[in-house]
Image (cartoon, rainbow, N blue to C red):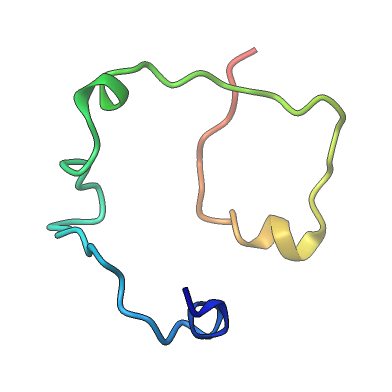
Length: 65
């Protein structure tokens, strides 16, 4: 394995999945795609910087308490 070429992203991947749409999960087993999502909170608070917070400006989800 040429690790330098890999790190420089000069190697072709041995497999490149076909993705038909941004939400296409056909490359994942149903065992995982059928799981209900669980909210996992961090062990310690990690407040976002204003720059990081700006990345989520258009998101409208909020956790139900």
